Length: 489
Image (cartoon, rainbow, N blue to C red; front, top):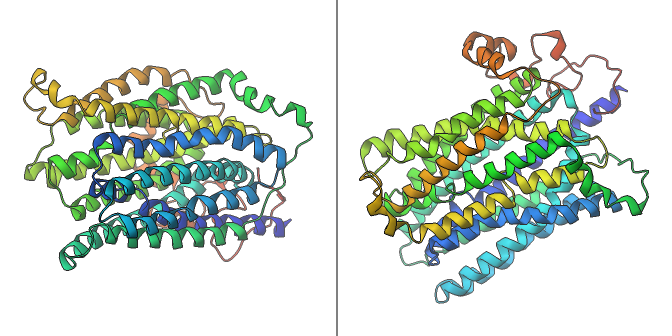
């Protein structure tokens, strides 16, 4: 029994190592680097909106992907296979960019969009298999803390690579002015591909959890109807769809606004991203423990309320020292801290709603409707199309609307307010009411108690209360208690 527990713990460690390199791949092929590369190729706001929407529309592939995983089983094989295709295709982009970008930028931009679309489709197919795999691998009693730990490490990777990558782009531009402006991005993409391959290595070392499937093949169609038969899950999906549209209506254009309208350098934008990543790192440790102790619903409601007002505050930003060095960093830090809670708890809530077996359709519907789903892609494209005409609307807005992008930010704020009324209808079997959770949040001393009096090394020490103890946590320690548990929840 102890050997079974140790096997799961080792697999959870490998999953963290895999996530480390996968985050490096995702950060270097996205984040601030992808839209910046597209701008060099002559991209317009509509192109940026399309690029931002591709990961979201790629999630539509998760519906047939869930059918493949359930019918042919072997979640580990599908995760690795689809991920290898998704990451390997970037080699083609690097070659095309090296050969064509200098003289045929429009063709390279078209290739970028096409290859990114192909990559995200296969990445989504890999993602739905991975989610089902993790639902079986990660014990239920530590999901909040485990994913909090994992996401905190990913935040450190984001901080490091964003800082180094942004600095490298500025350094390369200064020291190699005669080189093609795309050359520095090509080098970053090569590093991303290598990191993606290392991620696959650690995926292979994780144990596969066999699926239990006693249904006949003719019942596979019920996979797509079962999630929608659950009223509470339908409510959650409906909220997530509209919320994702409202958020991504504006989110792809904050970077473009800072680059084009405020003239901020890559290095400074990297610093802003680091502010958000640091806040995400701090938030994951706190929200992960809160999720395990108090449930997810109350955290989602509270954090959704906070992030609703972030785009409204952006309306008061501008090319001033106060905005550049105080307001914008503060917005990134606040957003990173509270978005950490929403992203962590919304996924944990789906894990709680989904059954232990035949659950891939639940994750597919969630991915399509979440902040990484098709509704988010539609929001990004809609915002991109509208941004082409916002300059004509500026005379009808107050004077502090000195950029067409601020109209997009304001509309996103209004859409988010309208969506907030839907989140109250969501229910969770385990959890505390919002009012009680607010009382917990207001008591800072209680935060430390919940995290075991060790706020900085809490991921490596057990919680202080006996109810939170588990043979699976912490992942790193010298001695483990004997356990009667031989399978993950």
